[in-house]
Length: 84
Image (tube, one colour):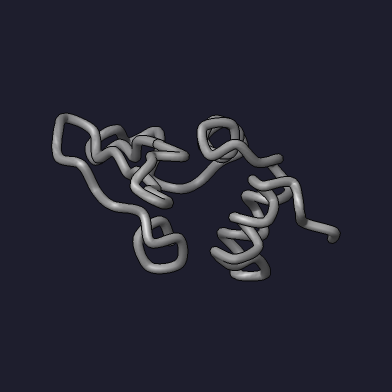
């Protein structure tokens, strides 16, 4: 979802960090753990953290994960132009 839907770029390291770059500027970053058994699925605690790091509400993040929100929706939300 992060790379395919949102077009985020992976950054190597102990945790896999993803960043979204718009107009040459990083507007969001979030990590995804590669080894912790606790986070093999997206639970409420992890989705809350990721939503906060991406600058959206939990409900909006859930929409991204469930494919009812797109990259255009995300950018509009971040710019404050989302009317939905």
